[in-house]
Image (spheres, rainbow over the protein chains, first blue to last red):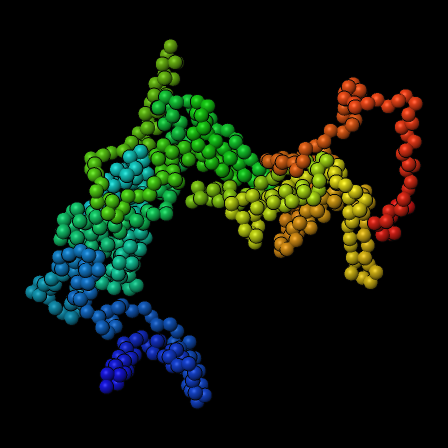
Length: 358
Length: 198
């Protein structure tokens, strides 16, 4: 009795599931589910295959166009999946893009509905996105300044900009499952729309649970994007040697002196040079390169990395439960490279003036 | 990713080594040389990875073989035609090509590798001390010799030879030369007639 009941259940579910699937899956059903097919099916299958080729792939559609879609339920479970208690109204607003509101207005105008008598009670997420954007930028900078106290302010801004890029944020948003929930005009959803939505979600979280919780959210989802990436590459430093000269002279050390440490295969395609930079006869840094000039530039970059304490063997970022105990100094401002270079030139020009006048 | 690029370049770039074969055993030397040709001294070594270094060997004319090997060690060849087999003793091969002994010793120890010939192309052999300048400019490391270079009798001064401690002195009328046999020109038994000098 029980066995037959189970069998009936399974059969019915299979039948219903077939309806739920997209057409392409339904067509391939006869290929996949059976281990063999009868010879009389051959012509039919071939014809269906040809038709599938002629029609081409299915056009991408929103998840909401398919059956079994409950927006209320999905909005609720979005918050539950992340373990956050969102305010439902603001979370809904966070997923409404400006283009969707405009589209709705156009639709109503086409239907001849007066917007003043029947107002469209739909707010877009731009306000939430702005507040989220501000919170994220502030927190990321504060966090980076405290974790890397020797890093220059320009480098911190570049790293923050990298994290706030549309590509990074859209990557996070799409993997959190925002893509299906977003209400916007274009489909597939553009990266810019995804990134705005992510900022709006952060803004909504700030409204619902306060600043601290929203910052923890940013720490858990945005900052891990830095893992495995080179922070120094994000900062476009065009003249590392100039910065190094300024740094060494301001700290009262000798001028940097590049020397060739080692070379191999100099007459071949795969020539390799190691250049070291010395100051006061002490090795500051060394780096390899295809030519002497490249190696010298890389050695200067290596020296700047050492000053910023962001070498390749630096300790990993403080994230997770350990990061909850971090005591961040919010008013902290790091040294600025531009400021250092300016001070160096003012000093050197002052000295040369005094030499010429005397 | 300039930093990663140069680091990778430094890992993958081929180093050039130099080896002085003066009075060295070719067989033991070749074992040391092929370690560098294959790249076995590198932490990224893998038998199918083409990461070997270049080795420049000079003074191959002055390699030293132990025992009776110059006479008895043979190099074989077969043309794959009927009766195409031939052999030559080591001294005869050395006389024809002074780099051949070293080359063959390395080549035979690379057996079982699919990249044998590629690796051999990175072995640069020179019979004497003259190495082309453009090759020498690439070199950045030296491979340690397998044995200490012995001092020859002609390297000692007459005074040092006279002062060498002796257990006894020969009597003045003792005939030193008489026990030595004449230098007979014996036929080179280990070389095919085609390659023989006589």
